[in-house]
Length: 281
Image (tube, rainbow, N blue to C red):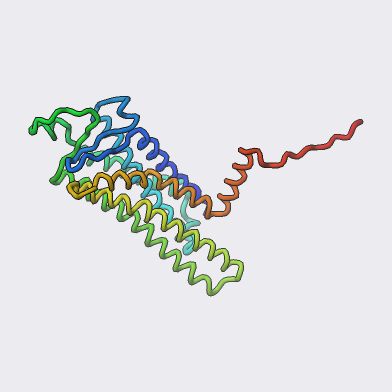
């Protein structure tokens, strides 16, 4: 399990990037129009709608990569327990390089297809003679451009969280079978890890997959009542999903919780200072 901290750090890194970009751009849907208003600090820095689009794709690409990072961790956990001989033949650096390549390729792909989904404010409202409003950025309201973007997101997210659920179930089944042929001490360790596994499977599926699917659904059907409010609530949950996952990982995984306690004790000067007595000469 030496590589497990690397996977957790990967998840937290993408979540941190999402929190930074989302802290600058607060998305305010303007449904039923396929537009958003850019609230937050970014509005004081610029009124360029294409800058808003850049931050928008950065936010949701970070969310996408956070989901992919979670999907990398669960197959590793399963193979480490069920097929340790295979993991011995896998080079950690090469594995990290493969994961980073997937992140780069998926980010470039979605940034590219996002350009087809973008529609300028003048193109969207020009025929209706609508007055210009600062902070509004828009998308194509329908057609293949919108469907390509939303369906691509839905497919990748479904595969990512399907991987989390599948390998979480396989590992749970493997550890349950091991309980019948191990010592009492090993059985207790397996039970603790099963509890850790179930909690860490529940968090990404509930706070990550669910809100993201709701966001895609409301974007696909913006005329539904309260769809804008639903997206705003879901995005807040998504922005903090990685933070929740990190806190839960620290609380439920004993080595991390012990390290966190030591750090807190040092920060708040709770450690007892040892004083060395020196005898006078």
